[in-house]
Image 1 (cartoon, rainbow, N blue to C red):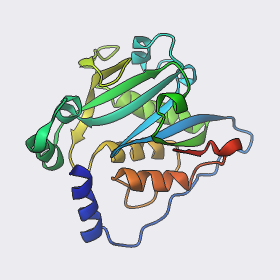
Image 2: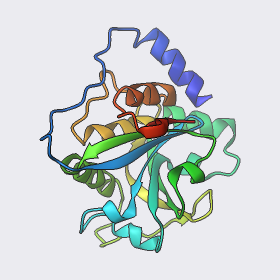
Image 3: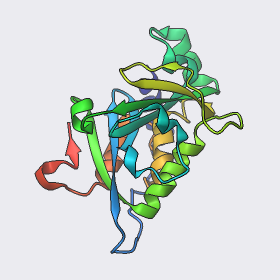
Image 4: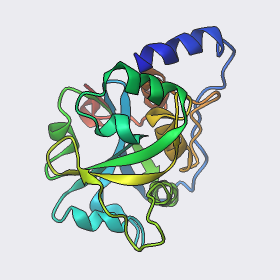
Length: 220
C-alpha cells in the first residue's frame, strides 16, 4: 500500500524531467571499498564489511561480534517493529511525520548468501566517500548523548536489533530516501528528484554500479 501511494504521487506530481545519477570524480589511485544496496520488498538497505568501518564510528557494531558484514535499514519506528502493522498503522506511517528506527543485521556469511532472492547491487566506493557514508549512518543513530545507542529490541531476522534513530519518517522521507541520502553522502548523485520507491532507488543505483567478474554488480 505504501509503495502504491508513492507510485501514484510519482505519476501525478513528479512527472517531470529528472537529472540522472552521476559518479563524482575521485583520484584514480584511491582505493575502493564495496557497498551493497539491497532491495527487500519495498524496502532498501545498505550493507558493507564491518572491518571497513573507520575508527570511532558506529560503536553499535560491537553488538555484532564476529560478523563479516552489517546491513542497515531506516524506517517508521512503530510500523517497522510491528509483526502485523495493519492498515491504520500503515496510513499513519505514510501521512504523519513519526519517530524513526534503525534496523541493523549482522551477517556472518556472504551478502549474497544472507539475502538470497533479493536484488543486490554492488557499488565500489572510494575510501574517502565510504568514510562519509559511514559517518552519515553513524549520525542516524539517536544516542541520547551516550557513547553508544541502546537497542530497543531484537530485530525481525536472526542476529539483528532495532535502535532509536534520528529524523522523522513520512511518505516522502522514507527508507528509500534515507538510503539515497546515505549514498549521496559519498559524493555520488542519484539524480533529482531523489528516488523514494525501491524500484527508483535500484534503477538509479544500477546505472552507477561497476560491472564485476561473473556479473556480481547486479544480482537477484
